Image 1 (cartoon, rainbow, N blue to C red):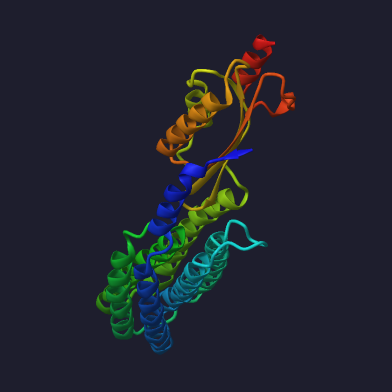
Image 2 (image 1 turned 90 degrees about the vertical axis):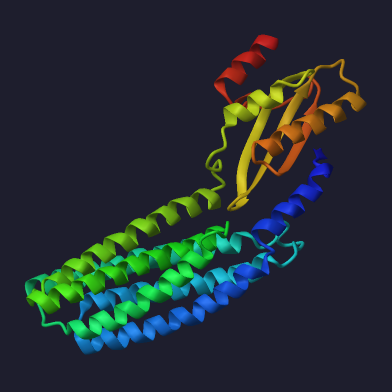
Length: 320
């Protein structure tokens, strides 16, 4: 099996960009401790003011702390070198962290909705001043953290940023709610806000769940077209067919491919190496940095059912 020995540099470069930067680790550490302060302020404020919206926001902050803590941990893990047991390294620990974290968010959203339904039946007096002060602390800190980390290209950081921006919106809602309660005395505003915060939490979490499941199930990465890959490989002179094609993500933004390429019997070994390099070059332009390609002649046996597209299969049968 001829592996891509030319992509070593590219592969490391990719690793450097997405994972090896110490800046996000430092930022995640700062984010962790600042978010802990937000939680303490909102819990105290929520209990003093009897505001479910503020306690919901504090519930969201708990998941922020989990998100940031897990992302921080996962970044350290992803810097560990590959081992005999984990030949791809520890990149997937970050994906697992994002998945666990997103599932926890959905559970918290359900708990908030349940509490809000109870408040609709029995609205409780809410102290708007504490709502206002506590939520303002949350809003300012979350905007500072979320905007500071927004440019990082890492699913875990993106997951944490989504929490922070969502939390900033929730805090803004609580502030508006505090003002409405202060001016009108409509305590029903509090559970209404809680429901909106819960929907916001659940919606953001579901997107992360879908993305992480796709990576863990080794689904075709977003934005990658198998038809386009097949067409690019077959566009090389001497290539008759492609089969056993698999494309997956090792982790977010790090795509891998393996396939068998059937070459014309007249192709020499030297010519096959030129074709291999050409295919690797084309794949890198399609967003695949790690390719393992097995070159075969027309007589090489393979499983017909594994031919990767109907058009390919038809073409293959036509050659026979």
